[in-house]
Image 1: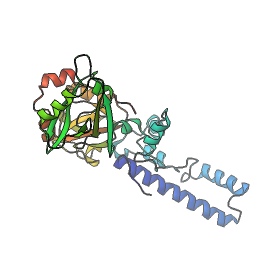
Image 2 (image 1 turned 135 degrees about the horizontal axis):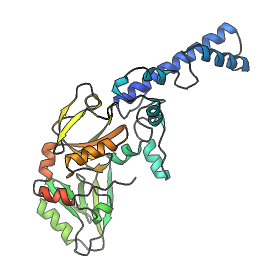
Image 3 (image 1 turned 90 degrees about the horizontal axis):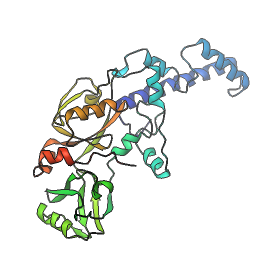
Image 4 (image 1 turned 30 degrees about the horizontal axis):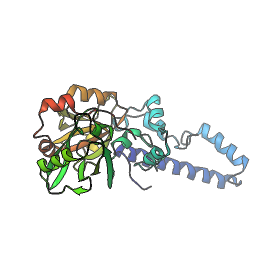
Length: 318
């Protein structure tokens, strides 16, 4: 077993499944030696199948009886009903080859059993990619790109994305770092100078080199049988963790701001709306968080009413 997993629950379930499969294979080998029959003969397979029906240690599932054993207990506080097991183990499909390549590169692709579906679309939507990419924007009729910027530690960062703007449609996200504007480096520029570059850029084509949300990190948590993740928040800020919950187990931290849920920006959403998004999400939820002090610095010059009314909350595309 090797590789990364979306959650600690996924790692634990896969370890248990692999142990069960190893035990089943060892028992089949022992039966083969006792019966002195070719391991791959029809007789051996028939004997093994018959033994499965009488011996509960081995099942016809490739995971042995691991899922049945999980169902018999309150395993890690998860919903382990038959319906939930089907939902957990059913992989999601993507329409395009590029989307398939993206989801196959996500943590957990090597697992033989998991709680989070392999190639989970929401985890892919929230992914913070390493490297630099370029977006090309065109200003609207008012000469606006729909983005505000803030300078922090000699870098320039996106502090606001206007709903239904050019920036929103191009996939610019809150917290992204701007590296160049039309080929000109912006490192070390003040807020005003960076904004002036954007304003003075051409109306029909503005090229911006960017890096994905360097102040953010993502983590996936799993709902328990009561549809809770194990943390509380106020005004979007994570304040408390429930001991023994998925949030606590998987490394969620207090004094951090919820930025995205399953890739969807929730900055400016009222708490009730954020809670609704969480409740309607699948059992595995990917959170994007940012230290609260960084968030406050980013939005310092933007009015709270503007953020609540005009911040972009669209669901990104793969």
